[in-house]
Image (cartoon, rainbow, N blue to C red):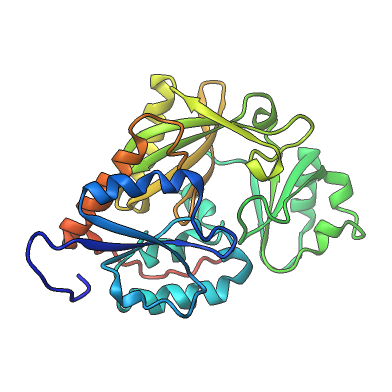
Length: 312
């Protein structure tokens, strides 16, 4: 794997990548440590921007709570590619390069998956037909194509957005305009968590009263959910249809139920909260998945895409 040698009893070392705001990782991630230790794996939280860390002393690098990556995307992608040259990284760099720009949703839509109605804007220009579509939506969500944790995400009336004075209209870089899905506020958003391509557990996330963002940072809540069989079957269909989900160590499928059907919001393949503390056995399952990847070095090789650069 990383060139380290030793007998079968040699303990492996794993770097769980975090950021300076969480030097000890998220609380749910720390649940992994005793289970990894029992499996002969020594895990350490590492800030991806800490230049003092010798990354080559690890057998595997796992992206977990690097929750500032979108604010420093060029630096992060450079670090990722440099790191992958000397140590295996999961999820794979090829997957990260596909997933970091939300333009991947357009690819999934072209494959027949139902996503929130979305307009992908590359250069800030919106034609008359697009303006009419936005106006019909009446209420919209505007977000950068590269973002996380609802950073710089706006909920507004479409008429307000179409006025040039509206700040969100002046968003830098590529961005998305999406029809607001009211079920997010009324019913909540479901997160289906997959490990090694296999369903583990699900949670229901709800925004705080008067808000639309489900993240804890904005007062959102999350609780364990046992989804109906029909919804889980649909989530499995999504997971089975996307190689980056099937082949990855972890994935979170975020969706909203509408009339018994899942409306896909996002595939989280870089640094999603996996809510390991909400489901019995989740931390043990994730630790076991990591141990399997360490034991089976061939599974660390991910399929290579012909073009890793998302384009809007």
